[in-house]
Length: 564
Image (cartoon, rainbow, N blue to C red; front, top):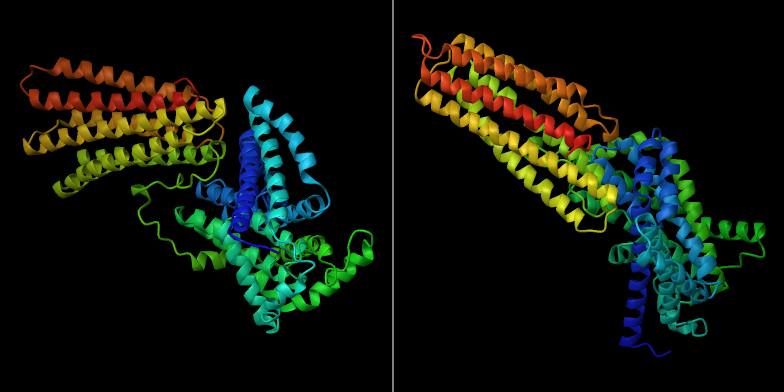
């Protein structure tokens, strides 16, 4: 069979078509049902058994275990899932991804795909161009489904059919005579293939197509599929590289689980495959053929092998998930360092905006906690026992103002990048709220910076506050502390719609009332011999600045409830 450079390009192009369709399918359903997927992950992972079902269900829906694992890593990174909860989801995704093999085997090699794929465009395209909101994204899902199978159809045509030329595969015989080392070799080949195409579903489709066209024998293809189980973990590991320690540990759990499973299966593979083949032929004689003598029977047998292996592996290893968590914790050391100096959650932009909003929400909550610490530094700067303590507290105020600038810039840039993508109206509103919150928090830090400059001037000029002035500022800082606590409680709520701003408004009114009281008292004392003008001016500057901080704190809560 003539196989030239053009044939290679056809294979690569067909594969690209297949992967593009899969990505469009996945993105479409994430946008159409993003909040539902997020809720499924949050509510159906209370134990590892439910987590397995959740991982299976989501992977079944979006037809991409890589998307499920990356989504899970991102949710661990965002603090929405614990390590143990993520383990169940990762394991379930392994079973869910086996459905792709059945779809490709049953439909891809039994049905003329183009006859069914082309009509799907008649439904999907109008939905994309005419529909709005979720209708548009469901249209993308349908188009992606059609493109996926058109790509698979082209891949079948592009791969040379060697069923009638078995001598062309004689070279494989040289690599199948080394026992377990041969199996390891083909496991490595499957791993590299999956790493290259960055999709276990795509590498599975390639493997099944090569088998259907007589290019790979059954046992070699089975070993490659095992390798694809290892290769698919690379996607989550890469996604976790820029995540926090918990995200990296979640990805490591997935890698350990898959590697352990492949290890025991590589050992028993020569005995497992014949038993599985005979069992399937006995149970379904009209459906399964002998994969050792009939190349056309290999795809279905491989799909059965993939499902059987992952299901058995889950049953064997699921009871030992706590040990996997410990192993992941041991192998991934905590290198986060000072968490106040960097973002903790919004480190992964591989998901759709609908699924990334949870990470942004958690990051703004973290931002609020960081800014809230500045009030304690101010208290030390005013009431510290020694000059050194006060100077160190002022330095911390300056440092945290720089941290706030960095966090506000990075959060805003991240939100802007998300907003540049296709997003739903609800997501757009939420992202705008997060941006407003980040802006108000940065403004609070700016006010503390100005307060620190005022205190520096006070120390340089040796200006002293009277005890009653210090008492007034301490009362104001105590109210601001309570306002920060309420603000951070509201930011930490998972559902902003449930937030009631009544308490926050009462605290803001109390801060305003105290400001008015202190201002009136300050003006009344001016002109009296024991009341110095310079200290009165600094005093007025400080309590007025604290009141402005209260204004921005209430702005944050108003953004949370959707009033700004």
